[in-house]
Image 1 (cartoon, rainbow, N blue to C red):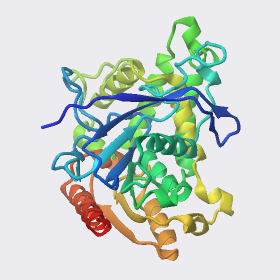
Image 2: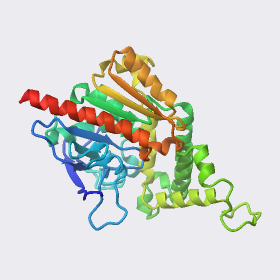
Image 3: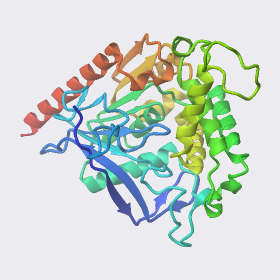
Length: 382
């Protein structure tokens, strides 16, 4: 059974320097915490979210049905990341639309909604903002940073930007950078949004409209890439939406898969901000720690000090196992402590959110070891 989660907000006056130049000030970060911080503050685990997730990682909101956190199967009392032993922190990233300062908020200088004028943010900017929040919480070193997909990129970035502030990095269904195909998918989705007549150059708020058509298409494109071919065929195949008769129409919804994608697009466009989508997919595109080292990933990872767990899924073609193996190879070349699990799961990229027993066992075992290590260190310090 899930516990009650309580969202919180922390305000920051001081400017945060950004990778793209400039800075952002007077911003808020939405976050949630679960479990108790131990006496020596050594049991904190930071969870980084992916594209359309938020700080609401686990638990439910009081009085709200179907409000489970997006990784509630992974995090909580007695779960693989056990909140009876860990103090877990979920942070909503800058530029998101779920509580932290983003394009929907007012610029502190002008009082006008940022819209398209919100600064471009990167994975590195998010990590630095998260570090500031941890400073405020009095957490000097994390037991682990955990993330899947784009969240895994943040966990990796943590190990490079703040190597002394974490003991473990858990990188699930992720990659050291996006390949050309992934960037292409992101660009098609962005073009769907910016060419929507209701986009108005990103200042659609002033016109009282939302580029819902573009958002729907962007979500449909993304959703296709999150599922494997086998899962799509198993769930939908060539089933027709209504009965057995074809309508012979180029515009009507005929197949179940069409109906499903339209439903997902419609739902997404009702709650997600278009400028946020552009910002977050661009952050995905830009992430490439090896770029500053002439493309040499081994050199880029040489500053990391954490122990690593990397997990990939065989049918995940968006973040294929080969990308995780690149990280494993470079970490081993730096003589880092690395564990790697390649799970033969049929679910595609979405597998990192699901309950595959082998995956859950790997995660539980790794976090059990972190908990033991934390307890031993606390006893020795005492």
